[in-house]
Length: 148
Image (cartoon, rainbow, N blue to C red; front, side, top):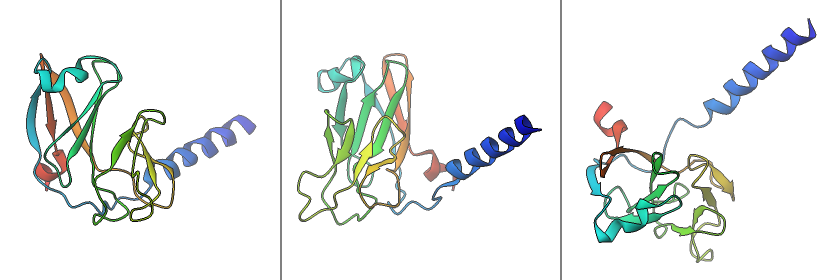
């Protein structure tokens, strides 16, 4: 009986955690491009932990290579307020944040945890784009934009 109760509690715990905020304050824009991984401008993406910024999205896009098969792509717009400057990558904490917290928010967003809030006051995670490796290219697309 105790085991069943434990399973029920764990199940509902996962439901609560996975629900989160469904609204995303960063506006949805068309994103659909390829990055040539062997292009010198994107050489960092050839190695695990490599990253780069590209134009596109609402306020630029950050791309991160987790393990050469998994790539993350996030909009650099701050979900706390799109009026803030573009987020930058902090390699020490693996987070996107602002260096100027006087004029911008003090929220850090985890790159490794699906753009979740790592610290600070934001109620929303980073806007994420799908990034799939196709041979020697990386396809980045906003699937949400094309599903609407």
